[in-house]
Image (cartoon, rainbow, N blue to C red; front, side):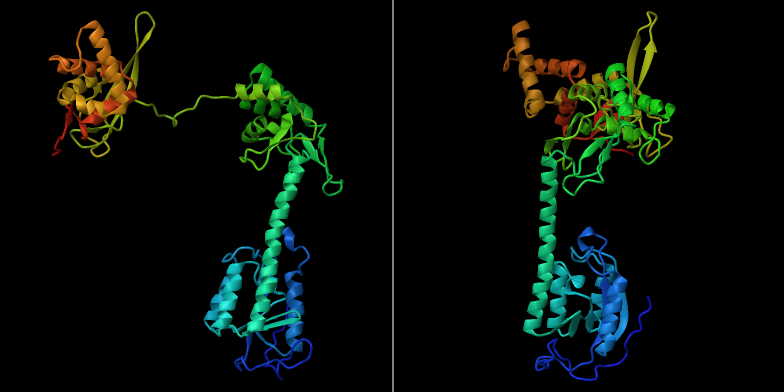
Length: 454
């Protein structure tokens, strides 16, 4: 819509809406250069507001009648609930600070601000003398205490309406949940009631798709089919969603994990607030639980990774790269398989590094030999080892007659080291190596500390 801007200055003194002259004792006699600002939010809470074109048409007509100088029109479709979120409005504020405009023409105060931050910015600009006037349909605000106070009241009222609306919406959704209806679209297999009165709409079963969804749950619970098996079956029977599309594999898993089908739902999701639905469930709670149990999978590591005892604890003694591990399996004559683990340089720093491989058993022996200098006190500092050491002492005392404090205590510790690296858990081995409090290196098939690389 084309609107012709008014380029003439006011011909007479400004007047209030009741026709009486304005008290100009506190107003600087300067020409006001207006920017016409029109805003419309796309949110439902502003359905009653005029469209942007209608705002511009009405305010341009007012500018022509009152002979206002409007040099530019700016429009924006954005909510004003939060400060600093409207690009066009933010640019308008910057232009006012730069002296491009010193007046704003807008349909209503709530077109400019529905939050305390933007309201404070407008009032600050008036206090600093950079914003001379704000004109709306039927109101004029200048840099006077009464005008600024009224502007703040009107914009604060708009903010109060926003805040109350949010509270009322949440209360309404909670009430709907307590009535047994989830306040959003129903999942596949159900139909929303679009003909019912507001607040009384029900949920109906989709007789075309519900039997197929019930069969999908039954196949998983009774026949042990996987999500991909269900996907292939639905493709085979050409099952379509309400929009006419095939279901994706991810949507099938979401469907099978959705408790809505057994008559309960959580809202909001992740809140822990559960409600019993007032609609007919497609499956029983027992069948839903059986499906969840069938779909349980053991947690996996990242693809292609395995966990070994000493990874991320060693560095290559030749080039300083990290040390990784890999496993090999050898088939014996009797058909059984034996597992071997080899540690080697990653060659991250030197692709031509020739540091040899070492088997885990040999590495265990190297650690036992290296840990001869570890004291009992260092071991006891580790909570992971203290209880295991006491248990080993009691066993040694009962079987070998060795007690803490006698002359064989060091031999007792060496036996404990061998026991940990031959029979201990991964955490116990790593805790023992941390007693060294130094970097470990792998060099020529030996475990070393404080190695100086060339």
